[in-house]
Image (cartoon, rainbow, N blue to C red; front, side):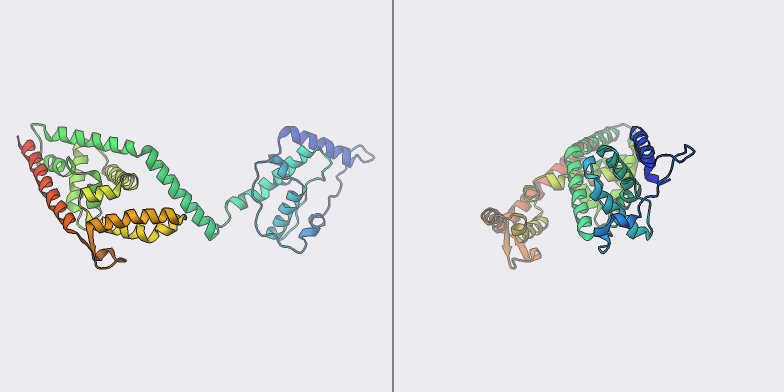
Length: 323
């Protein structure tokens, strides 16, 4: 028995068997006569010269499983298997029952081949774009919850550091992972060359709080990825005096602006904004190489003020912890 028969709904199967009996009749002893069916190729005159190498796409609309769809599927199966299969019965039943037969055959012989066929380069590229967009959607919808968990970890670590029997490891872990440091900065430091000391602080904190260190590192990395995507990175770079990343971003965006904004008038307006930011904070020796963008006098003054304020904040935190 062909495997597609098992996928036909029971009520349609009974109807089809009845129609087969009416069509084929009985012999002189009253037994059903099995009439020989047509050869596969006899149903495919238009496919006799054209090879069908791609399996047909599964359809949601039952009405599309018509005679043309049957011929397409048979042509594909004949080419791939290098053999003829027994075609379904001729369309002497109701149209809907016939469509169920064609769909059943399609699911048995073609559907798996379509779903697991090798992807083309275009399909792979489209899939990667979709995966990236879905990841962005996940970060947008659930990224805040990662931040809440990190804040709870930080609060619990601070509480442990204030305990009378605090250990030096717990105290140091709270200094490195507590305020005023941002999780995005910690994530960036963890990706640097020498991360052993900071990773050890993460492990010490996880040991005190009973947290899986791999989960903690994942939280930090995901939260940083979420912030990089959805925060105003330009304003953040400026407020924290991160001139090298700002130069890289401005230079890249200026080069790609015309590719991401098809409207030339809109692109020109954005270019004006980017150029004004660039000229305010950098002196250029090369427009195309951000490594040659030197912080301007204004940027240098902002950096000095930022470092003084950061030093005061760290000292204040140390004084508070030592009480």
